[in-house]
Image (cartoon, rainbow, N blue to C red; front, side):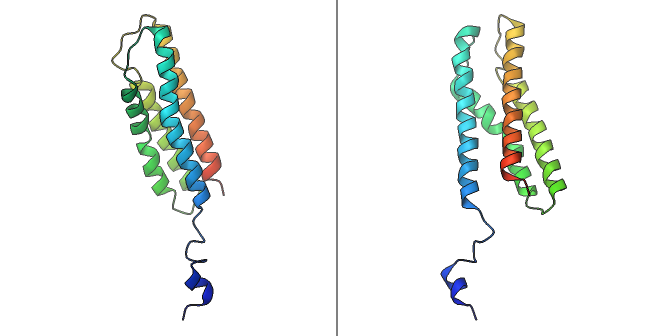
Amino acid sequence: MADADQLSGEHLYSGLEFQRLWVAAVILYGYVFLVPLLLMVLQPCTNVKVPLVNTICVYGYALSPVVIASIVCMVPSALVQLIALASAFVLSTWFVMFNVWRHQTVESRSLAYSVKLLSGALHVVLGAVVTYLFFRS
């Protein structure tokens, strides 16, 4: 028979941390929308016209490997979690760096590389924050 705690639902969700889920959603959705806004602010300096929606899509699709890594992280092994997240963020950072302003001609090549490096650096910071906050033992 079920005891009173089980009937009230206290033990049903004891392994889930909904506070972390909320924080993860704020961080990831904020990142997907705020970094493209930052790049949009930089556009007048570079004479580049890229629609905001295209940049948001690049950042959204870049997080696809992170979703798969999050599923793999359900394995209760710190090594597996670290390898999954590291490989997901390496692939994700590569995708961002090579697809931000991909088909646009920029007058200054060094400026274009600077924007790509900034995008990659912000993505590495996101990877470090997500790894630190959510997948530590």
